[in-house]
Length: 271
Image (tube, rainbow, N blue to C red; front, side, top):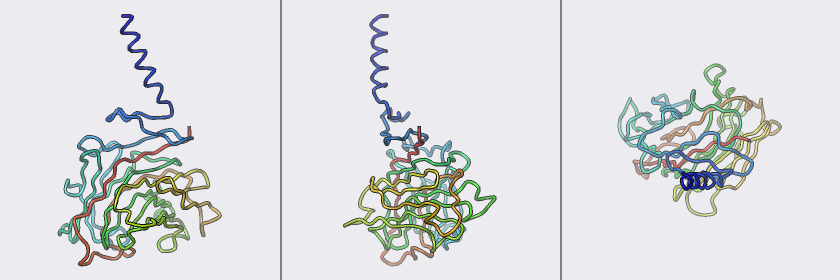
């Protein structure tokens, strides 16, 4: 028993040496944790199925107030987990009265938080009219409506701007085309050429946006032209829209299908 106890103790010490890191149950690999934060929840998209304890698919073809042209489905053609990635795939096909299909998932009712660092490693798609997003909505949207619930867009890209991603706030008095946002511009190339890490640090009275660790936008109550509505629980959304007032619409140059690949989503809290 002495040798076995020593082996167990050594194993415990080896695990303990990863202080400041969290273990991913599926991968048994340490998750790096930014200084000053502790892991809250995460999804590494291991396995073969979407984790329904964290995500809810949101099918439908309402256009979401943006005149989007896709119908969101739960079919594996549009939404799947494969090779350690979440795949959201848009197709040109007639479905539910729309010309395109895609997918949208959310953590509403499952993983809702006030404050934290939210980040995801994503490879976005490309093409005119293609609109991927990683964002958050106030969990009280059903009672107070939009934009009073608040919206935090961690990353949005529209296909006609391959070298830009946008970080944006929407609230009462600063929503839609009057939202409070800023872009992060690549020096060369397109964001769709590879994976990038998009993040916000959301704390009382302040939100900061990062791309690959580079701070590019900050918001405080004094900066927005309206009521600050970001001190209550929010949930996370990942989606790939096709068409809309802002991105415009697919044309002859748009190649479909297009995929949004998500390597992981991680949410941290202050210890």
